Length: 288
Image 1 (cartoon, one colour):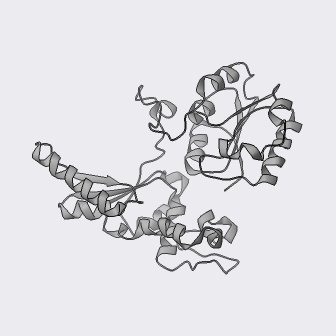
Image 2 (cartoon, one colour; image 1 turned 90 degrees about the vertical axis):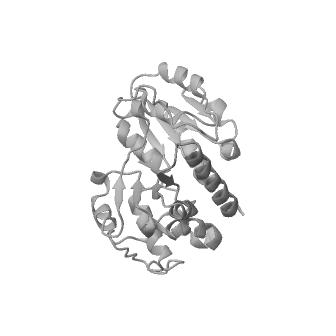
Image 3 (cartoon, one colour; image 1 turned 180 degrees about the vertical axis):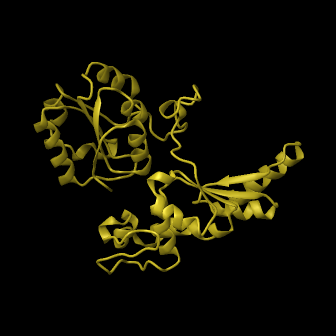
């Protein structure tokens, strides 16, 4: 249904723009909407897909889609062309926990590659020096162009002064209180903890993390989504109010760019990883 309606809506837009004297020359589409390329070809347009995940992850999903990487995983050593030998725990969670997530959810990720070989360009939010070997391999298959890191200019090269945020967010950040709190802390004294918008931390793991922050006696800024708050120990916020601030969401770029932040405990989502790398913030990795 969505594919049908989306295709029709995009077709209508292309025709409307052509009639207005401002015709479309190229369509850049999200890989989760592979039909975008079908529409581009139908109208004789160039089509480029923009992958926001790393080249390594794209390569793994592609080989799972092609059947080279068999699911569920059964071997203790995983061999994927273009990548070093890995263990199952090195795989993306939707691969390593395939039986938990199920085929339907995995299908969403694999279908990104149903027509990728027909795209005129494959843009990836990464950069060559970060993933040299896998990028070299992928460029033998497709017209890959790394265009990352795609974080706002004011947090990277500062060439575009009005480019300060990504744009639309499904969560409302609590910015003012976070910045005011950070402004009162010494340089590099704050542990920033966030697990993104999707990753779910287990109850026991959340309790251990909370106790570790409490026992460290260090300043910390902990981001816990509303849906995860019940996993925190009882009275944790009250007992750590002297050193800690707990919020449901935050403007991560602003926080990572703040001089008070000394390290970042992260779920290793690709955006979070690139942001921390670009802003020079040391990471404590808890991959999810």
